[in-house]
Image 1: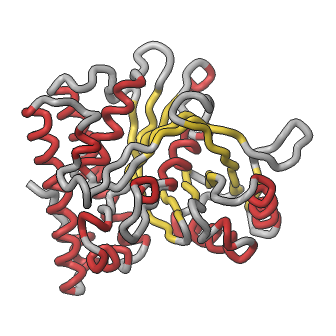
Image 2: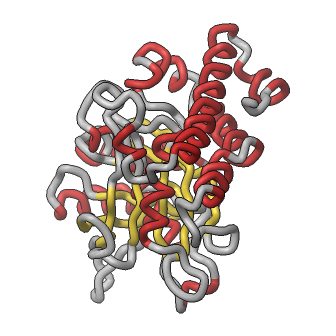
Length: 324
């Protein structure tokens, strides 16, 4: 559920709550068969750059191409350009992390909404217990490195099964669907929630992340009862939807996740120092990460050129190339 504030604001508003929910959801519902003996942490970072990096006008151009185009762009960056994999490779090669590998960490593009806007985000599912698990320190380094390379105001990592795992605990609830759910359909339900209670749609920190046929909602700046009542009312009146977070009596409730929000204020720290301080001091490492960050900025620039030319569909479907 990671969404960045679309105007200049403190780091926390630049953080992807959308990402939080994504992490949480994957952890609880999409974990591998090992879930019986292992637990998971999720990292989420959005490929759409922070407003203080790209500028308000350019950000609006990017958002204006619509969810489907942004999803395709994000999928190309993650899969074809291997942006998340490249960050892991650089960190590993420079000794900044030692426990992250393809057997314990997977990435995907997931839908997420924040304060009335729905965008795609990168979600990394990280096994944090059992044989060959990723260490907590490596989770933090990887999250900060992703935030830096993807030019984010903030990112998220959290454990939905351990509310004490990270900096603070956060309430969440899950809405499931009996049929497959696309990103656009998830957006439609999020918008519908706004007709039931606007505070759960456009209010402060209101948001969700969609994984498979479920949506994870993090409690916004509203009371717990308002959060539960609004989501329950929306789910009970929407086709195929069901409130899945239930108490022992089968009534709608919330659960808690442990969560952290790394971030960087790009106005005060245009070099990304708040991220880099948590990654390592190696000059070679920082140079390699800077090169990856520049590739992301080049990808953003190429997308903006296609937008200005009115050729977004042709660019994404036929002309897209990964930055070199």
